[in-house]
Length: 386
Image (cartoon, rainbow, N blue to C red; front, side, top):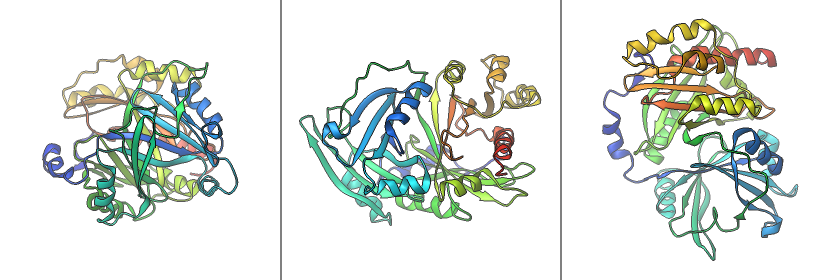
């Protein structure tokens, strides 16, 4: 990460001291997608991304209005939900946005208190605290709206020992491809409309006690044709990180504008998932048909040693192997990181995934932004949306 990136002028530990006072978050509990065909989407995420079957809710479990498949890989849980009739309001979300992220669920000790603390600070309620029970105990959930129609669900499961949560049963099909080494959700990025970024930064600060510890403006994130601005929000213990992007003026349409046009509003742009061995993970993903953005030019990789040397780091991986896979490298004072981005995983050019391996770095690949966005622009040009 280049040294001119704007950041707060005191240490992360200092900022985080007070950020978790009223809303302690233990981690990401699950991410729920609303999709047109959950059975087929589950097959895709298993086959392509190495997720494992975990839990199921549908007609066979007494759910008459929707079906949900839960997939798991290490600490990552994805929930894929589809309505079972035209009367279900989930249809409205799918018709407007296409397949996409509806719920970013946060694991908490006390869902009632989390709901109370956030709503009294101005959060719009999505779901009042609700207790769900079965023979394995109880789960308490409560939800609030964030940007667009996206929801943060607070999930309290300390009194539950069953599979996922009440209403679900174990899902053990014969077909379960091997995992690819994905470990946990590193961060999730939201796209918001023109001049809305600071509004949502303030919302996360005031409503959820998050802090803004990195900021990127259009002078730092731009190419010849387009630009954007971004601010990274984090909770007190640093386990939850939500960068927020907004468009900026450029000669042509930015990737953020393209997303907003096709998603028809703000929403989750991408999910960054961590691995301990990005070369193996990306190799397996490519073998399974996952499509990534085009490989950066050779001059990008020729400049990597100097960038690492600037921060006195030495690359442990084979740079030729990284180049052959299209994996990018960036560094900051604390280490370096390796990252790569998939093409959109829906027909609409909206949601995509980032694969990231951190070797000490806590940044978000600012040194890669130009190469990344030029690659995205090549995709936009092929779609006629640049």
